[in-house]
Image (cartoon, rainbow, N blue to C red; front, side, top):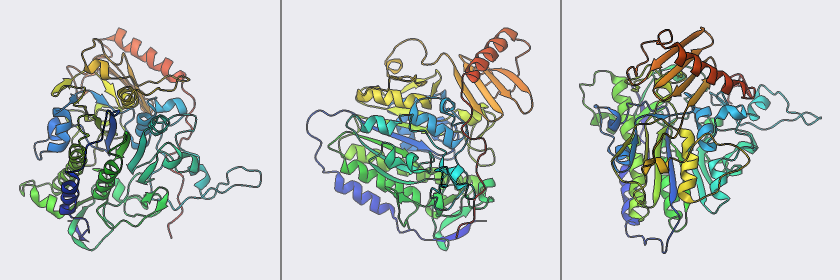
Amino acid sequence: MPMPFRKTALLLGACLAVGAASATAAKPAGPQRPNVVVIVTDDMGYGDPSLYGNRLIETRNIDSIGREGVMFTDGYASAPLCSPSRAGLVTGRYQQRFGFEQQISNGAFPELREVREEDGSLAPVQGEAEFLRRGVPASEKNIGEIFRSQGYRTAVIGKWHLGNGPEFLPNNRGFDHSFVFYGNTSLQSKNLSDPDMLSFKVDYHDELPLVAWSREGLNAVRKNGQIVNVEDFLLFRFRDEAVQFIEDNKNKPFLLYLPLNAPQPPLQVPSTYFERLRADIRNIHARAYNALLLAEDDAVGAVLDKLKSTGLDRNTIVFFVSDNGSAVSRPGRNVPFSGGKTSTLEGGIRVPYMIRWPAQLPAGQVYRKPVSLLDILPTAAAAAGLALPRDRALDGVNLLPYLKGAGGAPHDILYWKLGAESAVRMDRWKLWLNTRTGAAKLFDLERDPAEANDLSASEPAVFTDLKARYDAWNAALPPRAWTTVSPAPRKLK
């Protein structure tokens, strides 16, 4: 049963007032390079938005990105797990190329400070030194660094999860402004006596110590590196910070990286959203989960409305994606696929994926060839006319020519690897491997999207070809930079 929480200070009316006040704002003078907004949801299943089949709710704002732009049926994360997937997104490269295969952390670790021995080496203080070395290395150039170095104002608002040592933090990695928590999850509301908030325990995240139920340590919210007290419903505070960043930078080109903290646990949602859903949804967790999706849809809508009220919407390219599929222990919808978060089956890696750019892309496109989160950086850079690093190969590609009628497919082949599970997709064929069990299966995704029928025996040539390609790709990768998910944390004080 739900537990009560104290009422949040944030009201929807405040958001509407901000929108009304900005409706009369002057449009920026003269031509301007396109703005870029990258919205990343946390563990949203492929079938969670109504545009992708959810019939319990209507996510009209999220859907509008696909309806007014491009909806991708075969959009993929580069990993079925938060941290490595985001590392691939921000660099445009398979994260395994720089050893970033595993999660940086699961947990509300304490405030971490670098501790060094006399010889200068990191001291193993209860796992903290090991923890601080994990992140996207400085040798990789991320989307913030590339855009800021070429004249864009840059911000990240939401969940960072790309490194905790000083050299990995957002303000040291290309972002002018950050309003984030560093870890993998944080409380939506810390007001534990609020009767107008509902909370539900739905999966393992709710049982692990120091993971979801705090705002301390890595779960604390930081503005440009300094911890700030947030009494608001956190998803809505991220919404308001994003709206304010757009307002503050409406007269100059900007990049807004907006990795929102929903529908990842903890499953907390204002009761008003819960009550909007039909009482005949008997699974109370499903009702709450879809209520949180509605709240997230409203947050996305506020950002889109701000772009419109400032006259920036036509010349802003908006991406909407999820970092991976929903965990199977949650009420999220990965249908029609099998598996979920942490699995390289389709349910773990195929995600909602949409792009909207009214000035350049016609509305109503449905694109059916495989694309990847790796494509966001090169596509955004091409839209903005920015140069990309020439000293390394990007695995992502610029999607714009394909969305404007170019023939062929963006990718001949895509690869995945996370722990024991790996996968390869080439055209309609999917090879799935599990080194723990020794399983190796071949699927025809056009005929069998649920990956129920193994064709490795009946299509030996395809199986052998894909296995050889995977082995060659895997052999070229460096060793993993770390192999454990989390060092043992000490207790928070």
